[in-house]
Amino acid sequence: MHRFANPARFLRIANALLPWLTVGTVACLGIGLYMALFASPPDYQQGETVRIMYVHVPSAWMALFIYVFIAIASACSLIWRHPLADVAAKAASPIGAGFAFLTLVTGSLWGEPMWGTWWVWDARLTSMLVLFFLYLGHMALMGAFEEQSRGYRAAAVLALVGVINIPIIKFSVDWWSTLHQPASVIRLDGPTIDPSMLWPLLIMGLGFKLFFATLLIVRMKSELMAARVRALSLAQLRNA
Amino acid sequence: MEEFLNMGGYAVYVWPSYGLTALFMIALTLSSLHTLSKRKRQLAELEAKRPPRRAPRTAQPQTAQPQTAPTQTAQESSSS
Image 1 (tube, chains in turn orange, cyan):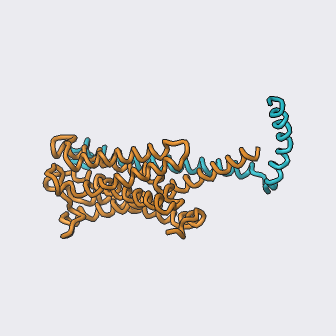
Image 2 (cartoon, rainbow over the protein chains, first blue to last red):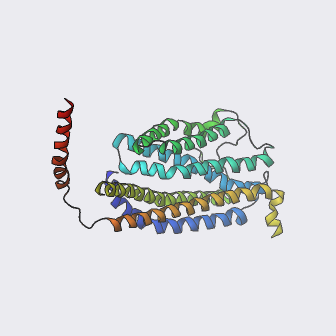
Image 3 (cartoon, rainbow over the protein chains, first blue to last red):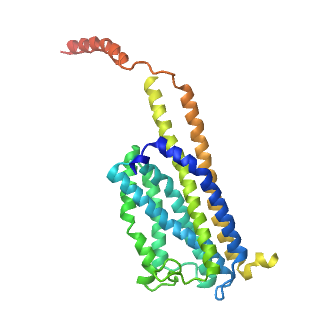
């Protein structure tokens, strides 16, 4: 891990990966969209609304995945003072917040025709809303202090405390009675969803993940440059 | 085509879901790329302004000190 601590080395690897990630993202999202909208069947119960699942479920996976990513980066920042860890957490947070928001909105858009309601205060939906607020809090704390490192520390502590919410979201459908359907893909006895719907879902999921990786690199590059801009302007102020 | 757009009567739920997802992903990509190019520009400007070689820094504060030191002692002696 520490071999990547040097931003120059990170930037070299990131720049080499970026074109491949971009191509992979576009390809997966293109194929995934085609399969989700044209090449997959309507559900025998849900009809065409099942197509909402192909954006709802990957968004939810990403919202959880990115939060865990931020929590791990925060731990690296607090324990080892890894210089890239805060940069990674800061770059990832708005992407995760966006996916958490999309999960809530697309879930509502599916819930209205299928459950007959936009929203219920049950365990799965409420814990997802809490995740969205955790993201907002994390973003706010990162920029809340004049001295940047203080904000980063506070945000890292919030991210680590909030990670308790992740297993709660995942298992909320098993622990409490809820309107939300239980897991049908990531379960011990294998997926229960039909392959004609599983494949478009998995390809969309991969596309979303690659999208995150691509955007993360772009945003981390920005963040590293911003740090260099700050350092250079300070040096010039001192010299003037 | 019309049947496809109609989504079995659920068009008002299906298309906004896809539309919002696409909107978020495209908007965040554009704003991230915009920030990156802005930072690149700022950095290029600063690098251009930077002097090619830094002057030896230790010389400056030492020459400044003797100038301030006499005035300080003069103030102190006048007040006591």
